[in-house]
Image (cartoon, rainbow, N blue to C red; front, side, top):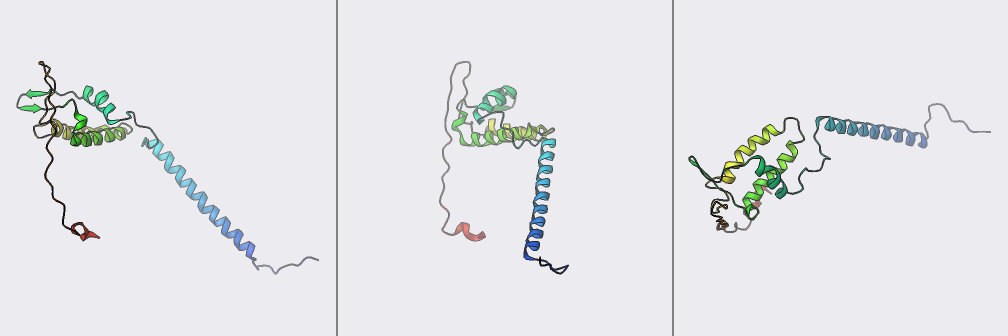
Length: 169
């Protein structure tokens, strides 16, 4: 004869089974949300999973930036543009150009991404090529074939006093 339990009485295995069902429902909902977010990202063209078009900042500068946005080096009206063929030796230039490259890689994947990127480029080029920019001490090869690269002298610096940076901890 089999033992019967009174109706409405729950066993430990019933409780565990209910907990597993609830956990499965939560996990299913999370998977659905993640799938929807991924589909929306793909639809928007965020391109998180797309590799960069250019593998290095050097490739981007030489293959895209300089041919696409050429600037006359030397005196142009009231403006003087500076360039250094060894641009990769100027830390400031590398930092600015790398930021432009990363921004360009993101912007190219978005429908109107180039608009804000172009504004950023328009801001950065006068800084890079300007009289006060990282190439100010250099001269690109001209008709006479002269080329000059001079690194900017390092700025003097003193270390901060002990515990100076600890005020926000």
